[in-house]
Length: 223
Image 1: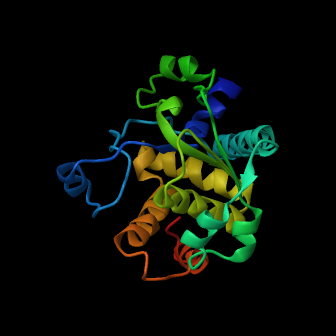
Image 2 (image 1 turned 90 degrees about the vertical axis):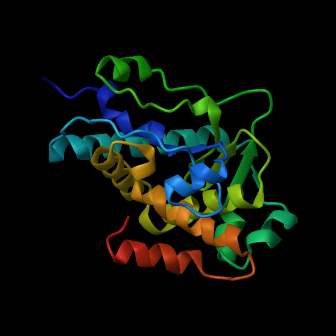
């Protein structure tokens, strides 16, 4: 069967950031300590793609990311002085200066129009993008709610990942992470972002370099 656009875009939905706040028991069960993380989605079987199909998916996802960035970039704004001050010790000045933020008002990011086709193929764990807190498209972050320091930090980790990896490589790793783990929660790029966010939440006074941490995870093959 020819590889089609609908199935090729399988991984685009996992670029979204969840908005739920876990209870203390849920946090404990999830293995996280004291910071916001998505409710764990149950891993589901995913298609067994060939290397060529994975490459095609990754290319299409990269194109999707670039298109969404262009769509929202003109409406987005630089970080405020207060936002920069909250995270300046953890990120490079260049990254903070180049990132743009957009908080949507009275509108939500719609689910992709290919969701019905994916559900028809047996995918049952597609997230509702309208319920997500924020979505990062390279250096443009689109949010459904005002940015808390923790939410901003998490999304800036993704911006740093994009900066080091490039959009094509980020897309490839996101695709492979989802296909290997079967859920948003298993994607190593998200594990990295939530882990670093957790360190920030636990003690914002304990400064570390997100740039160095992302580079370390990448060098060790954990992304």
